Length: 339
Ligand code: HPA
Ligand code: ZN
Image (cartoon, rainbow, N blue to C red; front, side, top):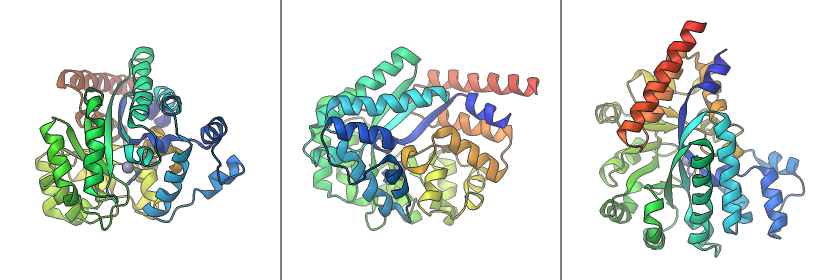
């Protein structure tokens, strides 16, 4: 009953790294097609290697997996496989991160990356009516100069990219370091988001707001250590894109029952539920909803509110957001009447 409700409720996914949707099956297929040597001999061996102790231990394996992505069609296949999956999960809108530097650093032209992802997004619009935006992330463990170079390389594709973000290893790489590239993004009219407060301190969330001017925080779960920060996030309606399964797999919380999303929600924060890197963390968006709902005993009303938050927090024009909110309202009322 709850499972069906979660499956069928319309939702948006706002924190999803396309490279993190690479399932071992596709990894093997692409390795063969591109004659890339994988350090694994079977799909089981790949899955066995997915035991992480923190963000860095995951990133090492995640960047290694991305080595099989070489050509436009690889990026298309990767993105299309994800979109087909979440269409079945009733995702109506996606805002997808990609990490150009993970690919340009290996000699893959940025145009191949963007064109491959973009054509899959176009196909999903046409076939499923699913809307989408692309968010280009800078790797914060590389220099700001490299981020600026990447930003400039992406400018010919400006109309296909809605926003910029910041990801990769967090601790020791404060958002402030990327002030200049985010200022350039502001000039070009991009939306801005940043990973902050996943492993890093609340101070990094302040910096993302004040130095980078972001309008949404990715993860942000550590904001709860700073009451003044929570007050600000509530007052300015800054949404947080929380990723429950990711947080457990990377040791941000020990067990799902320890997750603080309910406290965040009860503090009046606009929290959303997302999958981050579903192929690596063992579940797509509905699994993330379900595991949190079960562990924290969320009500139908809570789930419905979190689904609404996903649209309130997204970058679609307001009239489309309002339509989605209305759809959720009707869906929720119908479900309540039928139960
Ligand atoms: N944090 C930082 N970088 C990432 C993540 C994450 O959760 N997933 C993919 N790159
Ligand atoms: Zn992430």
